[in-house]
Length: 218
Ligand code: DX5
Ligand code: ZN
Image: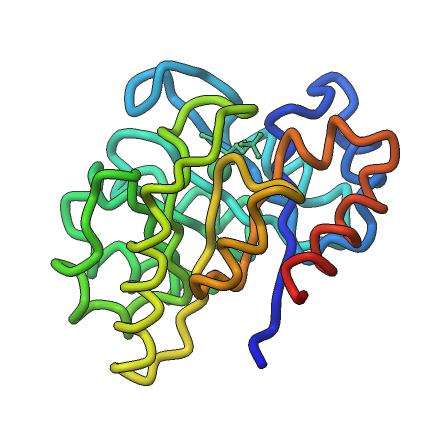
């Protein structure tokens, strides 16, 4: 069976105490950092300097999700900032194959994100260039939105394409993932689960990480 991973998003954590917030999710596999530039999405978060400080503050590897324009130009800075995985949006990338190769060459896992209405099929032949595909299950921009069931068939198709090509590519879902929705995602074939508000609105975030892991495996 598949290795299931939980990657809490700090988007809804206390930005004035990020080090302490990350310390509350000690059993997480990754920390998901949502980088937003007010252009690709209508929200603004933080950049490479902040991410570098966070990487130094924890032993948990960082999973950067870049919701930014011009990722071809800016993504390498997040590898240099110490992220173990860097995800760019295909809708914004000019040369996704070249960018994925550059991220890998610099030493991070390369990942490509698709918004809910972006099809996976045009990218079938580049799956081998990617360590992970992120399928957004909300429109990117904000935490706390409702999970979009309409993405489930795409999760299934993505998993089938990965099986067909025999690639080791991980399949991540992001947006509205909770105890209510994580089983559907896992059943459809996802193996890496981002959860923001579900984790940081819980009294015990680390217990929620464990609960989500158990639900995904059930
Ligand atoms: C949304 C971000 C997500 C978000 C997830 O644009 O990419 O990572 O923080 O938050 P929840 O789990 O609350 O939808
Ligand atoms: Zn995200």
